[in-house]
Length: 185
Image (cartoon, rainbow, N blue to C red; front, side, top):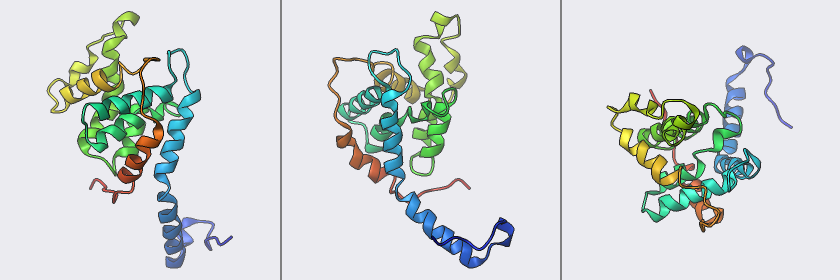
């Protein structure tokens, strides 16, 4: 297997970094597949709900599709909880960071904050402030995040709901994550 010539990055050559860029480009082409693998891992994540987190995600995306959302929002609904496995306390932030080069700032903001906004439905049962989301009430996407949680998150735990299969959404995931990445300046 070919490798770079250095053990310390400061000693790398132009050829080393061109080689690594080529390998990175090939690896990045498989991002959609890795994200779908992360979705699949939700089949065995946190238990206790009437459906798996995987089924929750399929329900979320199906609801977004049925409500006529654009492909980006459908994919965001499908993948919004993939960060749960590695970042259970900040999963929205982790997922939004993955989405950021490929999705709009608005979609990333919604996904980043959906955990806080979702607390509206249960925080009061734990003696916590269900209206903590109101710290963002003047934000232009405040209502969009409320709507996301209402239509594509809190209502997606129904064992009787007929979700579309993941295969229906896979082409959408591939289209979104094959976009040319955009980076913040």
